[in-house]
Image (cartoon, rainbow, N blue to C red; front, side, top):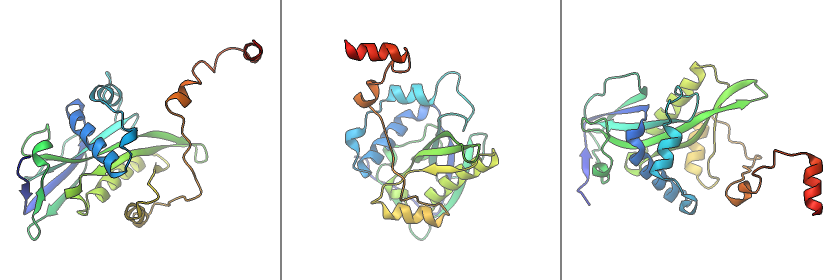
Length: 226
């Protein structure tokens, strides 16, 4: 394993739109998240699936479909571009930060940047508000970079973009044992619903419904009788 890269002084963070070049890092970050959440048994992503689903051709406009965002850190200022969604300047002069994985996460944007996190989000719809919303599927920061305000910047940037384009709300899930995350979200003003439960069909439980939307009730009843 390569020696840790130490960041000190001013470090610039950029949350930007991802592209297909980021897929290897997105894959690795999702796996790290699965390890943190003790859910590696559910991990089935591949580079090919991530590329085809997150970066189709033609690609929809950001925040109108599946949208992937990447968190990059740089030892020099990152000029804002059309891909920039959020940014933050860190002062590590008093507490230099050692990133043992920096060599494994070089940003494809170059310039000495290191990828440290990601967000995946997509639109949903609130019938009560009669407005579209934004669902944050994942928000993740690698361990060395946590507790530096990066998660707050990322979520604030996504929420800000949702508000700017007229969406009615932003939603996400949190594991009930992750009290640090729950406290953080509540500090940001989010309401954590304890009376709601996630319902999910996946794998064989979902596949058994293939074709169930076609045919008449009489045909289905006849099939049961055979």
